[in-house]
Amino acid sequence: SESAAPRLYGDLARWWPLISPPDEYEDEAAFVATLLTSGSRAVHDVLELGSGGGHNAHFLSRRFTMTLVDLSRQMLEVSRRLNPGCEHLLGDMRTVRLGRTFDAVFVHDAIDYMLTEDDLRQAIGTARAHCRPGGVVVLVPDDTAESFEPTSGHGGVDADDGRGARYLEWTWDPDPADTWVRTEYAFLLREADGSVEAVRETHYT
Image 1 (cartoon, helix red, strand yellow):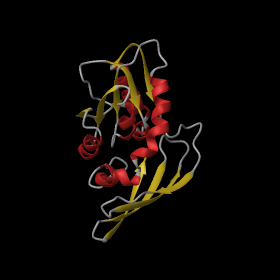
Image 2 (cartoon, helix red, strand yellow):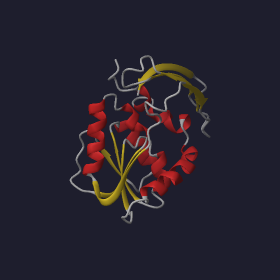
Image 3 (cartoon, helix red, strand yellow):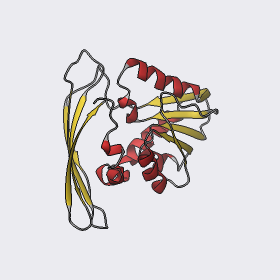
């Protein structure tokens, strides 16, 4: 179903660093940092909602104290290994309330998984609720309704331990009148012993 949690962020989460390697995020994180500091407030601490495997945080944490919130326990575990100095918290960006505020709030492409306008309003409300006056909320979706174009892509890398991952992705909009698009993923996942698993799954964003 459209609400089912993707395996990519569940039992396949350990493959995330090979599917989307951390070093590919350095330039994007630098751009995000300029946006985070574009307000009138000096930025020291940043809340990231939907932080996933923590690949942006890996670079942002060199400049800011990062608090990372994600819906997936498995992705938080991946991020903890990469970012042991960051605070990690389990939570839904639509409803989480931490009882404190931050100089800036960042939401990367996890915002894409807000499939309805109500979900999106709730997520933005969470971001605003945690942002101090003069700070900024930075949302970085992959697409908007006005800019969407069908795409395809591929990637993945090998690890030093013999594991490897490759993927193909294909994204299109079955119905431009609704509020989501569809991506079909195919993953080839090679264990260190040479065994290979093929996984296909659908994401709605």
